[in-house]
Image (cartoon, rainbow over all chains, first blue to last red; front, side, top):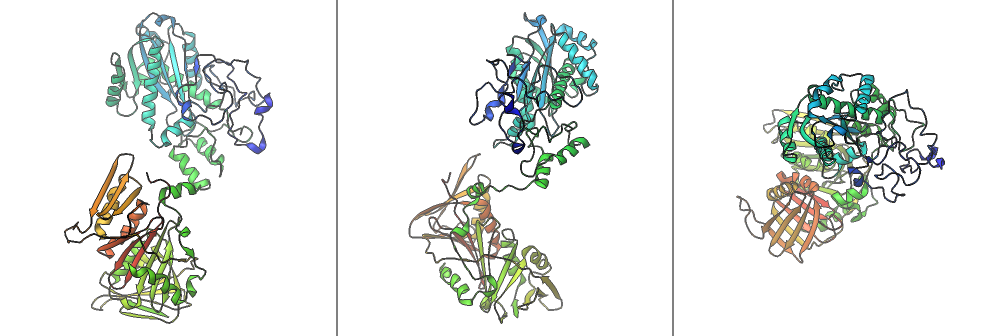
Length: 374
Length: 259
């Protein structure tokens, strides 16, 4: 069984989906969500393979040696983050907190992690709790995830999980593949538009789960006023606050930012190469920001002239485009060219054997004489 | 040796402007009947053919046939140094590796000499067959340039339909569609320039606007352009330049269904 996922050296970049890697720890609450449909694998094995909605019908197969390979350093891996390759975007919602089960008014914060980096998923999270518990949340020590150390974030996240009776949250991870796909497809979708859609979808899903959302706090993407107006049209009855630095101003946004950041970190640290390049690719890609020297180093060392980068990469980022232009071989798409511009003109005119310097005068003239009619 | 003198340097400047976007390096083939050039763009979709007849020069002498391989960008830079009204003399030896250019100002008080290094260029020469085109449209070159520019906002390609009444250019794109119909015999601009259509049968062909816009860079050479079309053969776009010769562009039609 487990043989099927062992790396075959001659097929480093094979793009098959490893069917034996089933999520081990997650249940029906995990949803493979939105974007999968955009790139359905052509002729595929049973639908049970990646992040499927329903629990696996058969017991998950044993992990291959590669899946159990120790990850660099020990890190906190929250159970909601899939350990399967993140090719499709996924969403996870906590169970409805008991304190909100009977229509108690809730405030909800939304924040994101990993918007700027050139690699890895972009994670959006929302966190919600009863309106009157706002202060209690602040007392837990919630703060902007950027000013907290990693261990503090992990601790606060565990704290949030332990207060599951009144704090609920949801996470949506946009896979790098979906981000690239969105931004590069014919009718392009900007990152901002993707951010807005994801936020709206998270709020909608939370409401659909029976939470009586009364107030929404969002860290701004683009100008706050127009974003707030946009959100207001989608959620007319809810008090919307869109602000810069909302993650340090409102505890519920801080909580969301922690959930997002912890999820992104875990997704990156436990990154599974769908290409099967474990043996040759390191995970020392740093923060993923194009300004991070570790990231730049990784990008330069791991570019393949023919295959480019694995699906960890956001191919729509100019950093990535530039490196590929510089270091990878160019690709010619003859079919596209013909379709775009026209056919090869040489197909219409016979080739002359005589090269330029020795063209006899008559040949040259005769080729023009007949055309001088017009 | 080759020695050729043009009364106005501006002619060569305009010719160069008309081809340098399409072709980077090319051989100028010199014979005692004149200078010609044939080259394709990088993707081999378009072919440009240029002729300067010996009779169009003030003075022309070419003892033996030879080719001058020239970087058009470099020639363009040197020609920038010539005034439009300067006389231009070019000289080269058959086995030399330079082209000498001499610019003389109209009252001959300033003489500038430039030497341009020549290159060895491999080029494919194509024989252009005798074609009786189904439709020949002659129209003001400025009008053609404007049509190509205007339709570029909609699409990458233009459909050209010619029938008895005139010629129609149309483009369909994601944001919408547009069409420009020019009636035969109607004056379309202030000069009273007229569009004429000679045709044996209607034609309907689709071409890349990117290339047509490139061809339209020859507009300053001539007030009139002729579009010569038959089904399934390359479009010929010709600009005649005064008495001296012409520039002709050939463009393969787009294949497949024309949106």
